Image (cartoon, rainbow, N blue to C red; front, side, top):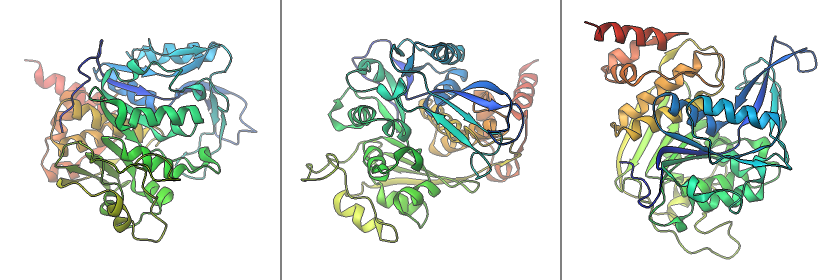
Length: 394
């Protein structure tokens, strides 16, 4: 699938990322939040992480969001702009504050951590169709979204439906959607159903095999996920330390037409969520005929000396989108995604400098045996770049 941008948009960039970013407070030493005496300030946000990584790699990226008129809002805008991201479409809210959160030094991917969010009523939760510049949101060749935004408020959900809906017209950019299921954000809401609906409206979807089971009760591997989610032109199922599988439809991102909204359904074209323990493939295909599959590609994960897992999923999506923007083959898109994720996995923070295009291209071109022999540890991106520069120097 190639990427085509809006034909009538001005100041078109490579990628627009829309979503909330928050000021993050990281502990200066291990321990319970109740015991940690001081914290260091950083930034965190799934969508802005993608924008920052892409900008650091030389792509033109724009972040669309809302922040407060407080100092934390100033810090977010300045920090994200510091990565080279265009922040001109970020709006300031004079009433709502910028969201913040605190976390312990434990691994967020396990139970050995605490996270305290202060985002209820945040400026970003006030985003809606009326309060966001839709022309700016659609001003990229790619629009990257995540399921986190939909959970913030009814206004945010309405905005997500507008941006992923079929009514955006021929000028709609390619929509990239990271499911990012966070059960705690949804409370008693129908998070799984909403996320399935939004994913069905996207062109490229990223979902973990584990979160597909947690959200939708889908077990049975990537094929089962694809059977329940046949609409996206590209579906990437992340399989943790095993690897990732990408499904590409023959339509190359053209979504099949959707049936009219039935009485009492969640939204136009939203089919029922597969039930846990059921047969999702049969139920999904009844309502959404599966397009012809052009390819299914699996790429194993790399061997990585992990420092921290936070932000690796965002880096994976950014690497895949970078390679997509460069029209690389699907196998190389997955390999670039793994390499970008490895850069973040071997660094302590949410954001890490991605490998250069030269370095990533060289490693992505390895044969299967060479790929499987790679072992990456802290500092590997800098060492690889120095090696590439030495080769180029006469």
